[in-house]
Structures are given as C-alpha cells and as structure tokens.
Image 1 (cartoon, rainbow, N blue to C red):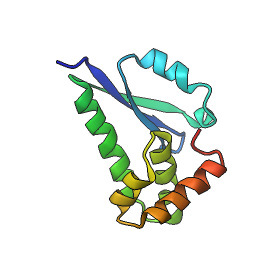
Image 2: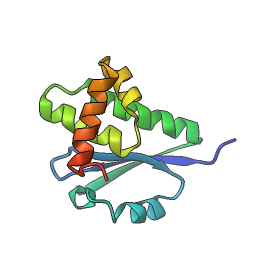
Image 3: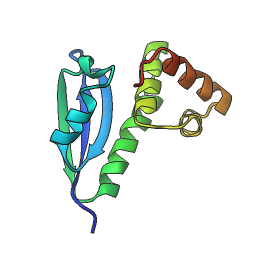
Image 4: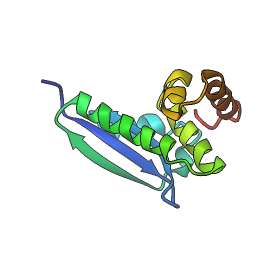
Length: 119
C-alpha cells in the first residue's frame, strides 16, 4: 500500500488558486516553495490527506482539469495555464484537456514561461 499523501491548494488573498500539489511532508514542501517567484502571492492553504499517493495525484489532476475547463475569460485561461505549467503539465496534456492544437498549447505555455510566471 502507498504512503498517506496530502493534496494541497495554495490560494491568493482573492481566493485565486496559485498552486496545487501533493506531498507526504507538508512542512518540507512549503519550505521548497518559499523560493518560487509566485510564493509572495500565497495567502492561505488547504490540505486534504489521502490514504495513497495515486489518490492524491488524482485529486491534483482533477483540480488542474477543473481550472482549465472552467476558464471563461482570457484572464482565467491564463491563470489555468500558469497553474498547469507550475505543476509540470506538458503542452500535450493541456492540448488534450482544452481540445486545442498542441501548437496553441505550446504557444500559451511559452508565453507564461517567458513572463516567468511559472517558476
């Protein structure tokens, strides 16, 4: 059986989702994030524990999919692409979820990377 694993959500003061991730050690993982360019945006976090790593990974994936599919404006789509990029989604994964050409997903990821909004 897999080790208990947490899925965590980091939110900005306006409740915008800044990051989603999984870990077995919340304190260590938060320490890892403190050096990221986006860390100053984080105002609060929510943590949910799962009995296995696969269950936590599924929760993380569902959060990113919901953000991508729920984007209803350019700003929310940009935020969803940033989130997907921060958690390591490839242009292929983004293209598949948005049902867009891979070249378009690549262009979006490149734009947010060049603005240094992911790392």
